[in-house]
Length: 462
Image 1 (cartoon, rainbow, N blue to C red):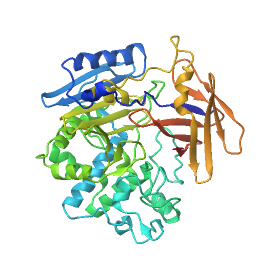
Image 2: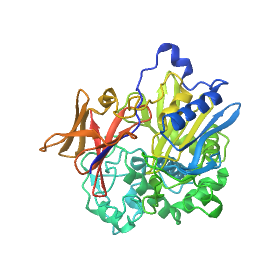
Image 3: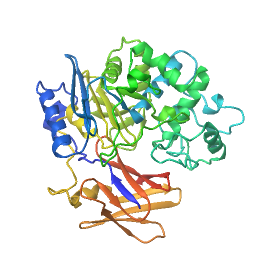
Image 4: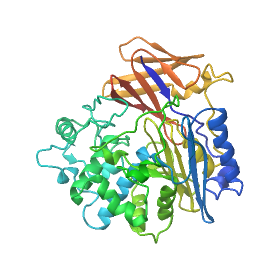
């Protein structure tokens, strides 16, 4: 059966003039009670989560607010030391490792990636230009989101059996379809490769690189990939979009793309270091934001790892993430010293909560179901409508007619997308699975078509 799982959407609004002062302003004194209300509403009434922990940092200090459970049927409460999979938020750790190695003189941003691969690997080039470390770190390498030979035997733990040999075989046989550096296109493959080559250059595995260069200097005692017993006991159970327990994800080969686990307290310390130029990694952290490339979205750039939204001279620096059982968001405002961390033990996104805290004029996401929870609001489909490029010559079209949503692949008949059940944002169509992808501000930027355990990403065509 094909399911289309729509990620949470909220409106992408231009900031009204009266709201400009709110963007990245220090949250009001009532922010703690406001967040408690938001979390209770989301978990207890809307049933769009099992447990969520929010951390806020301001010049006046830190606050940690939590609501919900450690797992379905497990009454243990979550707190700032609860451990979660942080998924793609781990990419900023990989980017920080790169920036630190540049500071140490171990690598340079314009080094070809091939310089740090075995001689037997042929790294793709185009027009005589090699892919550099900077290209990987800014998602402008031209590499696809995932390697085409990625075919997990267990879709519930998709990265577990992908090997270094498979990665190198893909690279040696892949032909780039666009010029290097010409376009931003988010790539898990690119960041997995970046973590791989940085670890090779440092002479250690990726986990040891992050531990020795980042976690230990910053005192991040709850941030790791392999969890010792004391951390494993604090790992919240992950849940899918139906709030059913799911296995944790394991990844070695593409670990740099997002295999870390961490806590809200650790990530608040990480954010605080980015806000303090005198921190032990302050120089490398500042260097991460110094190099930027456009994403194609107005006012949004990609730096080393971080996305940076600019409004009226203020910047919001952020990254989000999600696995099959968790969702995450980390962001901060350098000009005002405000930071936000949101971690949840379900794959239902939490981006809107984080953005609402730093800019209350941004509305929270609302459930797409009606009051009875039976039928999604058809108006929420409008954001999905458009054309998506699966490959160089393959386009998928999503259309809407009234209360009906349709999917049509090139040369194939149009298929209606139908709500699967009354308790989730899950749809069915044919024999595959589809997830719409949004950025932190609600704009639909792509989709992933999953069929027979294989993910096929598609980028939205403007």
